[in-house]
Length: 350
Image (spheres, rainbow, N blue to C red):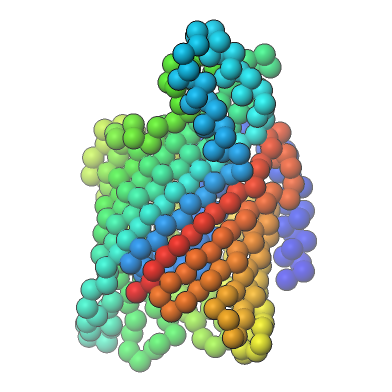
């Protein structure tokens, strides 16, 4: 475990050497971190309802200030001056937003030969954005790089186990994926014209496809480990506007050690995730769960090449609520300041 942490810290020191910020690449990494952090404690599509909001510090004030300045009754020149002041105030910083809402309904379990199948129907919507304000292109005319994406998924999730093996399970999610996105760089004049940084409602033209998630998991009293392939596009259906987001799936491997319950105890874990736009080393992380025997509370702490993430959670028999705090322990990164990311997650399990 010590060796893994040392490797992560060495890799983290290389964050500065990546060059000019690629907004889509950065969003892909942040979004995948959001997915992986949630997978540490929540089972995919096994909840009647789940809502997860991720928000960088200062996002609400920037979005509100820009909207108010753009919609004011002042002259165009005054509006542009106000927007320029906001951009200068938040120079060389990023703001990340991610909202995901999902619902699922369990169906009756049935047997097929030696296999037990537990299906459910699900629907989810995800809306995310990354705003990077910088003067990398022009020192005197700062701009906002804005990437915005919206996904909807609707399909069937099936848990497959084999009699009498209770330690191993496979989950297959087959669904229709609708995805639309836009990647823009806006100066003060364009922001005044648009009156806002982004608009999720405008993302109505994109791509539709059939996609697949495949999850293999094995668990016993001593350890759990899993291999996951998520968002694999298998059949294209229609394209109105090409999507810039990668069609390459997200791969995730995870291992957690279990211990005999005591008053409180630690359960360390290690994992790695990867997608096409970032390296395998960027996806390394290590951490531990703190479990409490007599209370429905637990918490985890994990460290990756860029972030330290703290997750306290209340977990009952059919309800959970957690807060996630994601802190960049090296700042700035690629000459961009990375504020803390706060997350609030609420769900009702089957």
